Image (cartoon, rainbow, N blue to C red; front, top):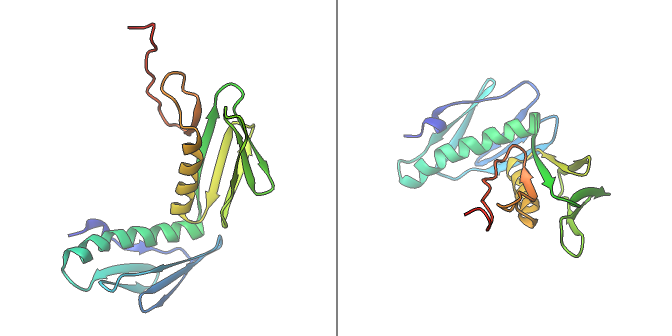
Length: 178
């Protein structure tokens, strides 16, 4: 029995919900997101909250119950507040800059790396070493942050590379320190 799936999704006054059969559309001040529910899950709206129920007791419905609730809750948070991730570029000569809607990274390769910002995602660079990614979809924000980090992940000896803010890198001792 899913404890997450049982809990209601609280809506604030600025979000509007439209439910058509198994398609839910949530609209807020930051944008609009849609999600298609599985036929094993049904959704009901009462006043300012949403509840999800299982139509059957098979394992697929049990698995999707909590997942669907969490995805819809993230949609509600995204259209009202939005999501953001911060990356830090660390290393001698490593820097980031914005050119129109492209992020340009100089992280020790022979050429600069250009990353095009997806639709609905805003990338901002502060003082050439801090990259902030914001958007309404938690999944897309996380995926863009992971893609940028994968270009030059932090290495364990000096800690150079692109890392998440507050990420702890366990450093190794080099050859000399046996």
